[in-house]
Length: 443
Image (cartoon, one colour):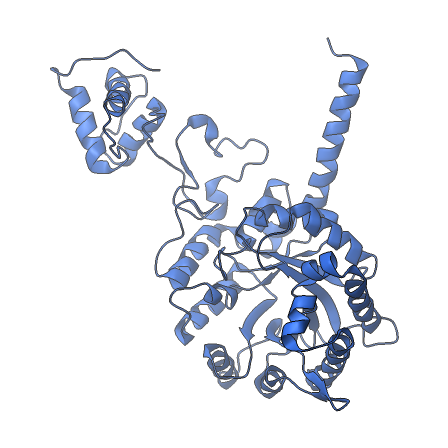
């Protein structure tokens, strides 16, 4: 019998869940796509011009609008060749961004960074200033706090004069405070000064249509989701909508996907991510995971903006470009094991709350045999999948005997990958042999 305290506790818990699900369901599902650029930073192969072309096409077909297509610097790279090739072919670069760095103040005047000059020469028509503000980065760059703010402000003005006039998909400036989390932790007063300066540049007396987003990242993946959320809430005090706040948590400590969700719940507009997790060091949160998590909350914007049916096929094609092979088997959503069930009650095919059935993202459901479980339902399904026994029944004596044999062999110290078709065929034949003794059933 439930008491009033029980009912109150249930109401409180359900209210917390409903509040957060509503935020995720109503989120705009905004992603600044990095698939053309970021995965190259962690690829053992790099990206060729042909790879860039393929990724440009893939991301467009998936439905990504705002895309980072290059990072510019002081030397020619494939990114520069790619931008020149796009210009030569009169490609539509609306909504496309390039990363550039602020210049430096020397003798009270701005010396533009080489990346600023290259962007002004051949585009694209929107820029992201990659800015470092923490004490360690300032010391490395030989800059004082005043230098950082002055250089950023002057660089923004210099680029704004050379960008296309603000229009849909054109003339935008985003600012990435790459080490904001470090600065906030070590020098919160300076972090506040920088953010207030950016907020002033977005103010009513300025060209407010220019600076449309503030971005930050967690390069080492060392900050907790609640730290991301706290910084997002703090930023919102100075940068109300429509200014976007975007996050970029790297991997390394297993926090990256939760950090994106907690940031959005705290008021972030979305994230700047590659579609797959491939990125510098150990990778980053992927927009594939972010968008499918929004789908779990019933977010309709994902359905409206993106081609969900191509999520998994596109992710697998991208992984081939980035690494030369398929995604890691354990990769969420796109990995080979993501939708291969070992237990029937682990399946997302029943349409229970929070499930994203495989067919909705272009994947296929399958089964996998693991010796420690050896569930008859999985054994029967695998026999059907491989065409070994099309009418396999989990309750049959043959399937039950197969499960028993797997456990017997494992107890005897034999480590056999029974999921491999050849081994599965052998096990099936042994279980059907009249001379094979029948052990007691495990299930």
